[in-house]
Length: 223
Image 1 (cartoon, rainbow, N blue to C red):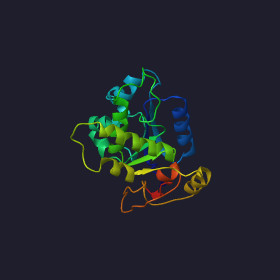
Image 2 (cartoon, rainbow, N blue to C red):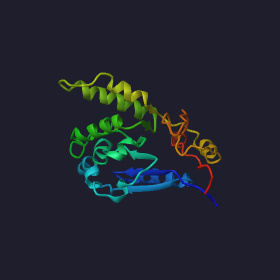
Image 3 (cartoon, helix red, strand yellow):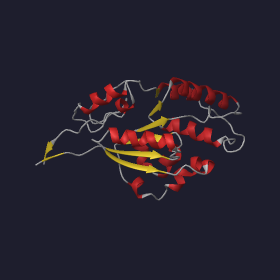
Image 4 (cartoon, rainbow, N blue to C red):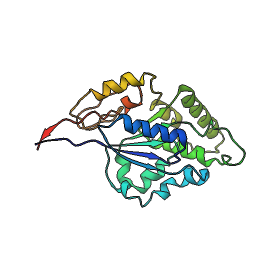
């Protein structure tokens, strides 16, 4: 009988505030052809949540499984997550920056620590692709990170921000057209993401977020 194997995506939202929650729910609902595993943490205790989410998820059974793609929000400590779960370090990863801590208004209380900025920076280094919801968000992240690193005394690797810049993109505004195009596309590849190899195929794509998460309807095989 014909069978299909849906590509598996792990979606992590470490501080699932209103806009983050709406974004992940809309993304999952818009892409029903994929097998989604979603982990979300409540939006409270900001400093602990942004720094401790990888520790909170340390014994999470879902993180022991294997996936075709990871999609994580900007609050996820991706570098620690991949360190705690080495098999995920080999999984293609998209970091979605809904906002960035370098441009977030400083209240003088909750966001005064440098650690949220470091989490954003380390996650961008650890990701295969960094997507921003606007050009302003991308530019303010890179500019803010540059100013932040200029304050460090030594030990900075060459080309760090240039490397992040090369893998950073802003989705297009024509989401409906791109979504319809992706839903009607089929391919033999189980995973085709932006610039990431799947099987014998590597493709590069521009367009909205659903174009970067290029996990088309799997090819049918006889079994």
